[in-house]
Every structure is written in C-alpha cells, then in structure tokens.
Image 1 (cartoon, rainbow, N blue to C red):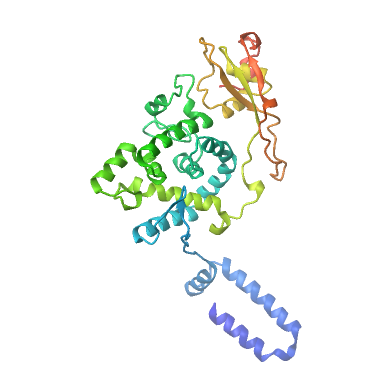
Image 2 (cartoon, rainbow, N blue to C red; image 1 turned 90 degrees about the vertical axis):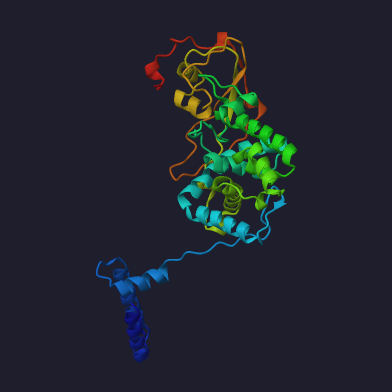
Length: 362
C-alpha cells in the first residue's frame, strides 16, 4: 500500500503541467484502487496490516479528576484505586451493546427511581445500583434475588413487601425502590458513609463491618475484599460516568434512540379478580399490556379476600407511540386526574364476560 501511494505522489509531482483535470482523474482512480484493496481477498498481508493500522482506532480512558460517589471523593491517586476504576471504565465503554441498552433503559426508568430516592433523602447516585444489579430488567438470580434491585425474599418480607403465589412486590419498581431506600438508610446509620453503604448492598452490612474490623481501616478504598465486592463500587462509578456523560465515551445518542417513559393511569382494586385477561379487556387494554405494566401480578388471577387495595397501572393512551421513523413525542407525566376511581366487586366483569380466546392470554 505504501509503495502504491509513493508511486502515485511521484507521478503527480512529475506531471503538474497536465493540469487539474489529470490530477483529479488520478485521485479518483486511486480512491477506487484503495476501495478495491480494502475489500479484495488478494490484498497482501503487508498492505492489509498498513490499511488496518491506519483505519482502526482504540483509545484509552481518562479518569475524571473530580470522580466521586454521592459526593464522597474517590482517591484516584492511589494506584490500586485508579487502575480498578480504569478497568471498569474500559470494560463498559467498549462493551457497546450492553452500555447502549443501558442508556436506553435508563431514560425510561430513572424518572421512576429518582424521585423515590430524593423523597427518602438517599443520594441520586444510588440509582446506578439498580442499573448494575439487574440492567433495569426484572431478572431473577441463581440465589433467588429478584427484580430491578435484586432483593432476596427474607429481606423483602423484612421490609414489608408482599410475596405470595399471586403477588410479588419485588417486581414492582416503585415499591422495590422504596424497600432499597430502607436498606440504604439503615446501612448509613451504621457506617455514616455512602460508599460503604453501596458496597454493603453487595456484601451485606455484616460482611463489610467484619472486613473493616479485621483490617482496621475505615473506608471502602482501603479494604481488601472478594473480587465481586472489590469491583462493585467501581462498576457503579463507571456506569455513572458513561450514562451521565455519553459523548465523552463515544455514545452519540438522539432523543429517538432512547426509550421513552410510557404514560399510565392507575386503577385501584379492592376485590378479587378471577381472570386478569377479562379484567384487562374491560379496561380497554389486553393481558400482555396488563402484565407488562404490572409484572408483580404473577398469575392470571388476584385473590383478595381481605379487601386490600391494589393499584394496577395500564397505558394511559395508545401504545402506538412511535412513527415509522422511530420518532416519538415526549413522555406524559402522570397527574391526579389520570387516577381511576376505586374499582369494586360490582364493577368487575364476571369471569365469563369475555372468552379467553379473545384475550390473547396463555
């Protein structure tokens, strides 16, 4: 490839008198030649290496000087801290498919999580814990940790969450965020340090306290921990950086590239629903949408002999929010007028009002 361009330059210098027309023609020929090289199986190993080295770019990552978690400074002059931080930034910057999806989901779900953290006086940075724990999806771990916040059953019950065959509130983003806030505040009373609180969400309060006592230090960055917990806060910090400053890390995202918040209206129910598919159709939606917006409903019925009030969300308007080019209008915030009056037993459809074959349920 180098020989080709050297000969081309020599040819152009020797023939300036032929004018712009000849030079232009030769440039076009050279571009065609280069294009053919780039796709040809006949490209030599030497020319291929030259082309690859000239075209492929991978950059290192700069560590922000003011890096902090919940206002607590990260000591990046410590080589162990700096290199651990760099590792997570490199992994997540260049794991583009995953980080791109997280950008999209964060745009939809952070507006749900942020006001709950704020109302509980928990720093906004804690929203990134949900992001690294579950990628903002309702996953279940091998240990049974469930939902956006990956809460195990004993912890959930300890914070007053309902878990039955029909209902599991760990799948409710708002309620599970409230439960996570209870944990964060309890841990902060113990550690008086938000970074240690975040680490304890992975290791447990007892585990972090035992490590602090054994190693006779008082902060996360001086602790020798298992690999998972040692990486945990740095993973949070990396995603905070990438999600909050996408362009710095090479993510050029338009509004249309991000998932919008879907406006919903709330229905309060205090009676048994024998068939959720029938109920969904009575509310001018379908079973799929009912389950999409209420994943905490685990079966096809809701038994409610105690007259407990459950809040069910359904789409506020049309589910066809995109045009053919993928554009959409901004999200609509829920207002008090969107809440539907209490639906009682007399308002609910009878089980056989709608045939199951019409509902799309399985």
